[in-house]
Amino acid sequence: MIREITIGQYYPADSVIHRLDPRVKIVCTLLFLISLFVQNSLSGYVIATLFLVFVIRASKVPFRFIVKGLKAIILLLMFTVVMNLFLTKEGAVLLHFWIFTITENGLRISVFMAIRLIYLIIGSSLMTLTTTPNALTDGIESLLRPLNRFRVPVHEVAMIMSIALRFIPILLEETDKIMKAQIARGADLESGNMIQRTKAMVPILVPLFVSAFRRANDLALAMEARCYCGGEGRTKMKPLVYKRQDYAAYVIVVAYVVLAFVAGRFAPLHIWIF
Amino acid sequence: MEMIRARELVYEYEQRDDEGNVIGMNRALDEIELDVRPGQFVAILGHNGSGKSTLAKHMNAILVPTGGTMWVNGRDTKDPRELMSVRQSAGMVFQNPDNQIIGTIVEEDVGFGPENLGVPTEEIWRRVEDGLKSVGMLEYRTHSPNKLSGGQKQRVAIAGVIAMEPECIVLDEPTAMLDPVGRKEVLRTVQELRKRKNVTVILITHYMEEAIDADAVYVMEGGHVVMQGTPREIFSRVDELKRYRLDVPQVTMLAEELRKGGLDIPKGILRREELVQAICRLS
Image 1: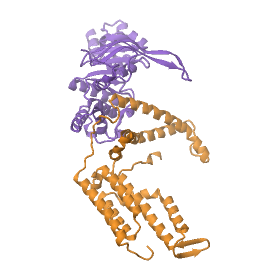
Image 2: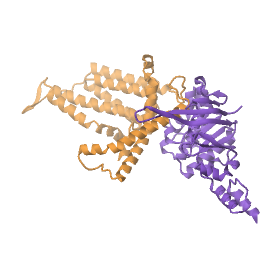
Image 3: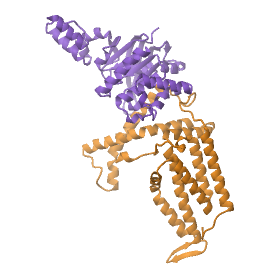
Image 4: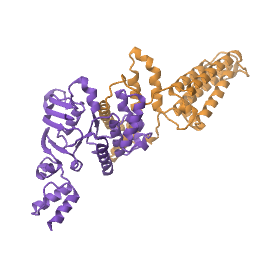
């Protein structure tokens, strides 16, 4: 059961989107997210939808994989929609019963909010689905490098992230082993209420932590033995280099942002209340 | 000039009680003298707690002596300015295969050492390929280390050391956590490396069989070097070895018992074929 957890889900495929530089994907995802939140018109969302469909097609990631990511936010989504729907008091009243009032504005805001959230999740999971965790860390490191000037240990943070990614499967396996060992000794992990079950986790967490620290110590020794001494003077085996497709991607995304903005401003496209 | 040289090497550490107060000094290494010439294969044998791993860590300047001196490739390991070149000269492979692989992909892990040394990108790729080829793991270059067997992981770790182009490889019980298949795999890799690259190999182990092909064997006990010589000399002193809680190879053991039983069999038999020949000569 514990093995089903996957973090930084990556969908391996050979597509243009997969081959893009991770920096491009990170920056473009951010641009896309910003464009969603400054958008407030139907035509803008239509363009965003077309753009998303275009990118999903280009990425060769099956649609159901992308939708899976939405499951995690269903509660948040419902909460936002309900709140916006019933608590917005401005505008003409559409429906009124007992203490609930739905106004035109309320409906409009809640629908737009839902679209924003859904597209936000689709957009960002598209990034993680098409980028290996390693490439993602490299991209983040390279994008945040200017922060070095403010004494932010960018390289170290990126190194920590990639080591964490490397050890997730190892520690999961270890947790599994410890659980079995404790069950074999008569530990009861399944029954009882929340509190009892949480308490039952202690004999699993303690050995897990001890072993994690031991591993960390070993790993630090091994890194030092291989001449690791921080980011300074280090070269890269796989340096990030912008290629033509990366510039093209920037151009396309910027064009989309401009188009969506202009369309929202000058051709807002009104249908009923939207 | 010796590849590795130790003179009156002492390593002490403080022994603390539960509250962290110093209750005494522990001497893990006591007056060690060691000479390893370039290209040699040296095995260091010893039971748990004999100080053999502590000694290994001195060769890579992970630990520095509290007394005496250790030179690696002519450089004093105590000198902080020489730290990086000492670590580059004497690559180290550790016991636990999982805890020494840093990369999430095999080739990235092998590239980790050269990256740290500031080697240019094209050169890193050449070294990674060369390193993986020399341990026979080239076809796994894009795999995740988590999917490999213990022996394969250990070979990747060796490739990672090779990629730093060291003059000497120190293997600290590289086979202790492996199954028999993995052990053979790793030992064969080390032998082939020695032939092909002419690197100095220092193998720390408690399996006597692994020391048979060594040029010199050191036996450690309680922080001292208690025996020293060629494998044949060492293995002919069966009773002494047993006193240091080391298991003599089965063939040597059998030959010794036969000799004690009155048969005319020479001392220090290491391989099965030798024993067969010796027995055939009897009749």
